Structures are given as C-alpha cells and as structure tokens.
Length: 253
Length: 87
Image 1: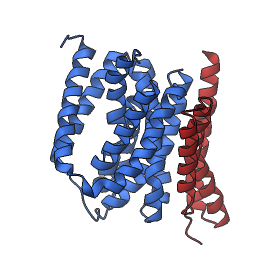
Image 2 (image 1 turned 120 degrees about the horizontal axis):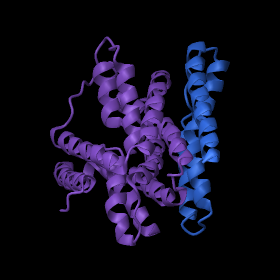
Image 3 (image 1 turned 180 degrees about the horizontal axis):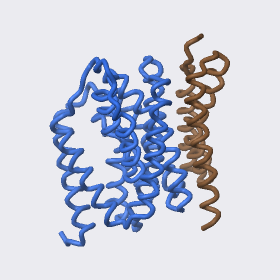
Image 4 (image 1 turned 120 degrees about the vertical axis):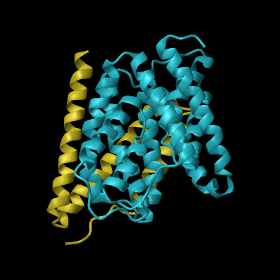
C-alpha cells in the first residue's frame, strides 16, 4: 500500500512539473482507480482531502525556486489568497456535503477540461495587461472553491485570471499562484480534517513522492519530449474522465 | 520603507526538513503525522515571517493584508477544531 501511494505521488509530481499540471488532477483519479487494486477504496472526498496535502507539497517544492528567481509577488499573493481561502472553505464544505457521485461527475468535467487545455494550450500574455479587472476577486474565489471541492491546486484557473484579468506577467502569475496554493490547501485540509475525511497516514507517502519528483521533474524537463507526453496524458485524462463520469452516473463500462 | 521579502533559504529549508521527515516515516510510521504537520506549517511560518517583517519595515498595507489572512486562518482552525470535537 505504501509503495503504491509513493508511486502515485511520484507520478503526480513528475507529470505536474513536466506538464505544468497541479498534482490533484493526477492524485485524485489515481487514488480512485489504483487504490482498489491494493484492496482499499476511498470515497472521492477522502481522495480530494489527501490531494490537498499533495497540492501543499507542490507549492512548497516549487515556491523555493520561484522565490530565488524573484517571481513571487508577496503583496499581490496575500491580497488574492483571501479570496482563494474563502472559496476553498466553501468548496471543501461542499465537498463534505455533496454526494460522492456529484463530486465525481464534476471532477470528470475537470478531467475533460484539463485534457482539452493540455492539447490546445491556454491563452497567455507574457507581459500582462495594464489595467486589472474588477472580476479578479470573484474569479479567484471560484478558483479556491474548485480547489476545495476537487482537491486541485487551482492553478488552471488562477494563472489565467491573474494573467488575463489581473495584468500580471505569466511567469509571475504562475509563481504567485503556486505560492498562494499552499495557504489555500492548508485551509482546505483543516476543513476536510474537521469532517474526518483527511487520512494523514495515507497522505504522507503521496506527499513524499511529490516532493521528490517535483524537483527531479524540474531538472529533466528539457530532456523529455513533452509534446508526446502531453498527448499521452491527455488520452489518460479522457479515459479517466469517461470512467469517473460513468461510475458517478451508475453506468457500467 | 524597505521591501519585505522572504529569505531565500526559507522554503528550501522547509522543503528539505519535510523531505527527511517523510522519508524517515517510511521506516518509522509515527513520523508520518509529524512530516505532514511540518509541511502544513511551512506556509504558516512564511506568513508569520512576512507579518513580522512588514511590521518592522513599517509597511502597514502589507501588514494589514497578512494579518487578515492570519485571522481568517485562525478562524478556520478554531472552527475546524470545534467541528471535529462536536462530531
């Protein structure tokens, strides 16, 4: 069991750093589909709770480098994190209250969206725009809610919001988003823990795998043919999304 | 007013300690809890560092923002403990 959890963390950390995905898109489906092979199954809420610790690991592993390169905007980060924490609390509470099938169905939509953006790429502005939009707070609250509900980092929402609506250059948006994910994941983990869904003993090997692989992934990034990896992983995401949607809707595959 | 920054060693130190604790926990399972709690404390410790630094530097805007985050997190923890105890 520990070896499997460690392998899930390694996979999440490696794919996360190579493809720019948050760990949650890997950790939650992997826990849902692979853990039963070791004779244990988890409700999707418990998988999302463990994934919060994974997100925290991604944040800690990556923030070190971002701070050294001076890319984290502390002032902006501590302003926006209020929105993501509030959204995260709401999302985590929803995660505890909603039926597992509903959360599973929403997660399958996230998997389809992730596969789509991985193949197509997201629109980005290298320098950012001059005037921040008034919708940044609302959008960041939404990002936080998704992170709380689904156990994801929320970077797929936060980075475009900061970049396209907030006028933050793309590299600083990515760094600041990764930095604030840690605090959002902390609040989400507390909410899930209060609902007795967070199993720290299962989360520890996943976190270890992510801490190791995120660093390794950053170092081998330029030696891996990422285009093929994107295509392959998009297909896995689509396959997982179809399976999760079918299971949530009670359709046997 | 000085520009408030996190020291460059802060996150690497947190990372390496978490890595060692979690690696040891593979052989000493009680350390799993310690390792994950340490991981949870890293962004909190950064928050406190920035709060103290901003107060010392007289950066009231940043101190206010960081205090708001700290208060919100304190509220989340208090409500979480209460909810966990009530169940």
